[in-house]
Length: 111
Length: 282
Image (cartoon, rainbow over all chains, first blue to last red; front, side):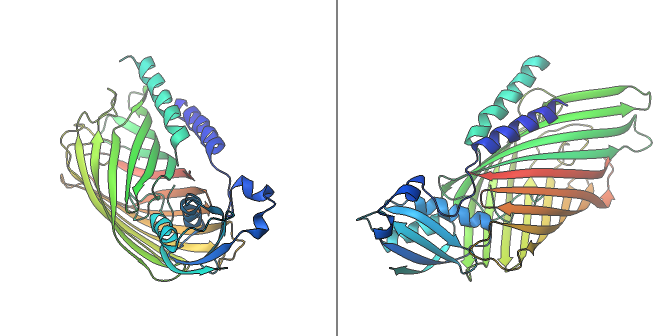
């Protein structure tokens, strides 16, 4: 019984701490009126085996300076990035973030 | 340490673990390890509740045993190919004997710390991947309950994970060098013999058939084979059907372990086990 109580409390606490499901993020992105003017890129990534994997790459890419939003498409294996105004992470920085997530960067297309 | 203090420590330890917690992809519920891991600075917290029912042999003074194991695993990425994990189990046991008296016990099991190195990765298409990892670590005695081994036991192992479209395979093997243990163990690995754990799992993505940009989660059917061989000759193999739902930042898993092979001379047979687990990615 004690164990059951601990389990219930633990799950309740953890679910409160867990970040919400999201593909594209940063709260600022939603209300930023300059978003449309920002540059973007599409990464083709290999090894995105599952929805959880997509979240892992999302977290790594959002840590790259200049990346505003990340949008993973598991259907095509592409990751769309929007950059902050005036900031353009290099291909090397993006490749390092993809590698850190445990995936392989195949191609970078800038728009 | 009094039982009251011991229980308070358990609850505190769980509470302290939770806020820093976090998950892993395509990892079957009963596998000891998989070759997937979180990236640097990312955490996976895996609380898992496991219920065992053991029906003792007629010669045993005990008639039946129920055991709940609440395992909390925190896995964190420390470099692109390196991760570490800490597993903290709480145990509760109910036993009845043939003289019709019941006994209940609660305590902390051994703490397990592991370091995992992904030695090979081959991402062949947007969704397909093959990964191989090796790991090593130690089981540490915690507390002074009947659930502690009172020994430091090294562990080494390897894991292979492959995902090809809707199909996933996970293979793992781990050897525990037991330095001391219970003279009358109930479960594999609790005694004084070394333990080989070998696990094979097949995962099939039930839904969606194809991923799209709108995919928010996936359902998997899982079938596992979980083997436990001890150097005293005891050998137990379970077939474990299960189901798993994987969302973008959490996973829910449910599995039942049913015995397929039981050649046991040193401990009772496990009639079945039920596993319910969650994983959270932070």
